[in-house]
Image (cartoon, rainbow, N blue to C red; front, side, top):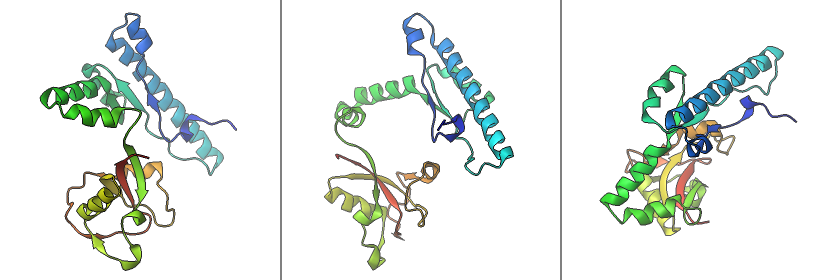
Amino acid sequence: REVTLDEFDSLLILADYVAIKEGADMQSSDSRSLASLLIIQDIQEAVYKEKLEKGDKSAKKPCNPISEILDTRTRSLLRVVDCKGYVMSNQIVSAAIAQVAESREMNAVLSELLSAEGNEPYLRPIELYVNLDKKEQLSFWDICLRARKRREIAVGYCAVDEELKVVKYEDCADMMLNPPDKGKKRVWSRGDIVVVFAQD
């Protein structure tokens, strides 16, 4: 079966590093990325409308493509093309280098998180940390302590639709990373997930 652009859960447009190696500047690479973004958005919208007109029940609203941007001056154009998400990869690298320059201990943390080996993010069911039958009220700090006993670091959570008991891509927008009221107690329910860093 043919998969159309409107069916993807996520789309990431990467910068043209080959052109940069051959002498192109960052702005021309960003221009290519933005042109690709506009073409993809047009195709997504056209296919989505066509499916709606045909009464196709599998039609779902297309995802927002994310574009990698190299030049900070390109950001102003992103509003014009209605780009909902972008990644400033050079800025991320610069921020990581600045953190290591300020505190050498950060190098070990960033190396662990950004390398292919070692700890990585996982979505764990709340049942690993809470006995749901007891209906106990626990704060996020309590969940963190229980995660720590499992040699994991809890960094957030997401309340998920109880009927589905799965994490859908659309629900990730509601994910709470570094929750503000960590000490506030709440009743956790079946289907909630905890975002942790752990070794598999």
